[in-house]
Length: 114
Length: 112
Image (cartoon, rainbow over all chains, first blue to last red; front, side, top):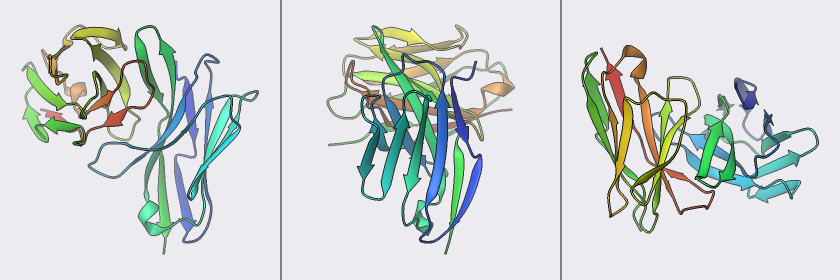
C-alpha cells in the first residue's frame, strides 16, 4: 500500500518560474512532512519540513503548503534556477514508540531550463 | 561536525553472495536508519537501530540484518543476494525520537 503519492513524475520549468510539486498521504497519524532534494549519485538532502499544525512554512525560495483536511501538501520553489534541477521527494513519518521511519513518495524529476 | 559517511561507494556482487555495508552516523546522533532506493524510486525503509538494537523494520525479509556499535556506527548485511537487491542503500542518522534524519551519500550495490 503506497501511503504517500507524489505528482508530477517530471517537471520542466523555465529559469525564474515557479515549480510546484504535490503530495497526498493516507495515514492521518503522520505528524511530520519533510521534503528532500537528491542530485544524481548523492543521498537525499533535507530541504524543508512541516508539521500538521501549520498550514504554511517558508524558507528562502522554498515554501511548503499543507492542507490537513485534504491530506495534501506541496512544495513551491520560487524563482527556480538551473541549479535546482534535481529529484525531489516528499515524505511523511509517524513518531511511533519505536522511533520515526520515513515513508517517501516516488519522486519528481525537476529540470529548470536556463 | 562530520556528516553521515558510508562505505564502500560502489560494490558489485553475484547472486547468492553476502554483502556488508557500513555507515558512520553524524556526530552526536544515536539512531541509524537504513533505506533501499531502487532506480527511479523513492527510498524504502529497511530498519532502524538505537542502543544497538533493532527498533522497527520495514517489509524486508530476514536475510537483511544489521548491527549498531557502541559508537553508533552501523552495518547492513544482506545474505543470499538476489538480482532485485541491486539498489542504492542509504543510511540516515538522527537523534532518538526526533524526526529529522540526515542521509549519507549511499552505497550503490549491483548484483549480477
